[in-house]
Length: 140
Length: 66
Image 1 (cartoon, chains in turn green, purple):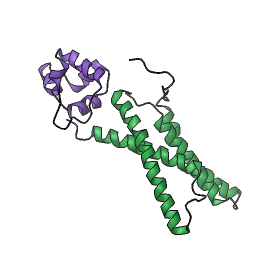
Image 2: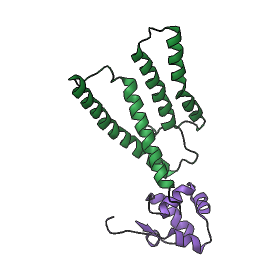
Image 3: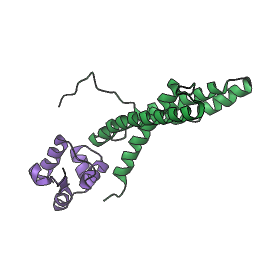
Image 4: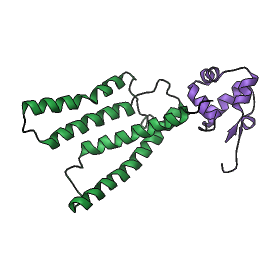
């Protein structure tokens, strides 16, 4: 069956995953370095740097090919993106509710694009890995 | 959905890996299909049926609730 090339998502080579794994600890060192160089660094800025790098890391992992990219994996990936968006809605809703109960307002400086991208990609990653785990456990 | 892939595989003395290679999917996918954890696409179901030389409806069977 022919696929619509406009909707086709080119996946990254699995080798890119190594870069993603570097992006998890890297921002911690950057933030420590920044704190040494400029002790007056805004803690919020440090948090955003960490969220940004982790969002990128999960994004790379989510868009990297598996060793065997067959229809089950493609199916899992599609489901993971759908589930990730669903969890993001509830997760953000919960954060807003907590914020409202604590500070009497729904909005907060906490809700940045970096945080949302990090949460979304983390949820997608977890949903994808969970499906693979379910498929692989209790092997025949 | 039930299926008799495991039985057909045994008849042909074929491992999951052998079948996976023939239909170009991973062994985990074949395992998931056999265990009823994953329902294959029509294309993959037809490919598997062709390998065993049986009709697709003889290989896959709807269960109550499907």
